[in-house]
Length: 190
Image (cartoon, rainbow, N blue to C red):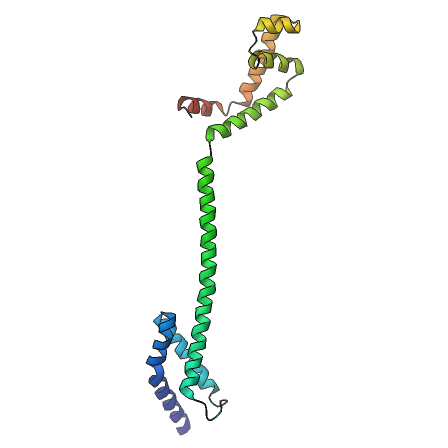
């Protein structure tokens, strides 16, 4: 019991004697007093647990300071790896954010909808019977009158009107969801 009290006093004396200089040493590198204190306590605990295994001529302060130094190095290495990982994540986030900004800046809504509307029109025309498609094409893309189309295709003018009406009805049905948007874009000069 007496021996245990002596060892406890010895540990307490040793702990207090080197506490401030060794914590200051660790803190000068770590720059976090709480972490430096934890490192010192861990180094002291390691020494105390291994004290009977150490050679009798061991320089105790040097042993403890070496332990503080090694633990400080490990902490700084860990911080370095962590900081590097955070920087890579941050760099990736910045790159992704810049990509989204440039994507949005280059986005032309009217062009996107124009392309989509053209695709719908083309699909609708492709689904129509050949004669209906040809008549509509001559009317809208070649700007021919109904009379010119009727003469060129040797059909009645009522047939031309019927096929154009049929195509317009199909297009109105397919583009009904885009009509409000088209009006908005047209009225706002987009």
